[in-house]
Image (cartoon, rainbow, N blue to C red; front, top):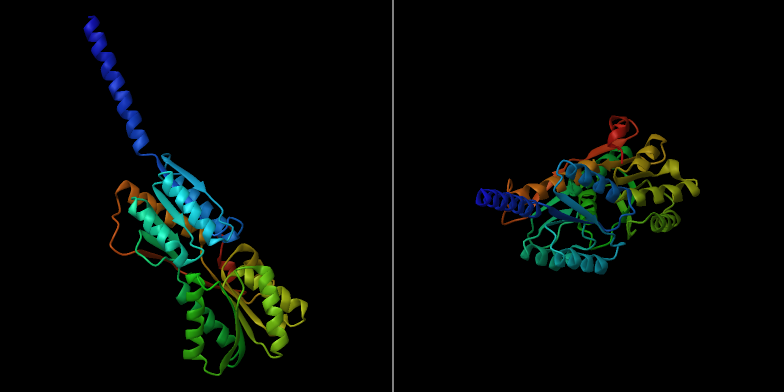
Length: 315
């Protein structure tokens, strides 16, 4: 009788130990590392990631703030790697600077999903806006609105930010192909920053007495351009376009102060990145030899179309 009880107790302990081990094995640590946590876009990505992970009780999410410094982001990538994270969702500040970190993580068996900006070597996936296509869409729409002639300028991203580079390429391609009579009279790096964009827009306005359009490759910079044009009393004369589709910019489009933006549902983008990571970790998706590109389609949000974006999808 005693032996029977002892065997039953040992069996129960073995089952419990096995269950604990299984739980430990299937609890995934996922790191989120954007360029900064202080932007509407990166906050919306995080919310999308969190919403996707709510359906999985066996995940733990850690978010870090690189404060727009590539060297800080490299250090934080090392922290995630050394702490044995299972997957990292990364928005690289500089594609070249973060390539070695991504390679190191993948070499340790850590899945890396990049957001918007890809890196130079293969990794699990890049979940991105259609940067080139949306840039082309902005160029096509802006050119039509100024009747295919005039002067336009670009407020650029930092040179290492591939997403911004592709947006500008698409815009320039549309101008070159569709509107040869439109002249691009200036292009300056706005550092993704509203205050820097105000400074640049003031310069554009001073140098160009007839400025018809400005493409800022993110909404923060478009809002800065709008403030500068408004202050100079020239807002009605300049078609200002942004990119991303954050809530504050959509409101300014409704007010007629910004012409348009290439809107992407950032909640969906963050959720898509998290789901991709989970599928890899659970084995329902296999990693390929090349980086898989997952594209979130853009939408031209203007005064006559912005109402189509529901309140729930405004970030």
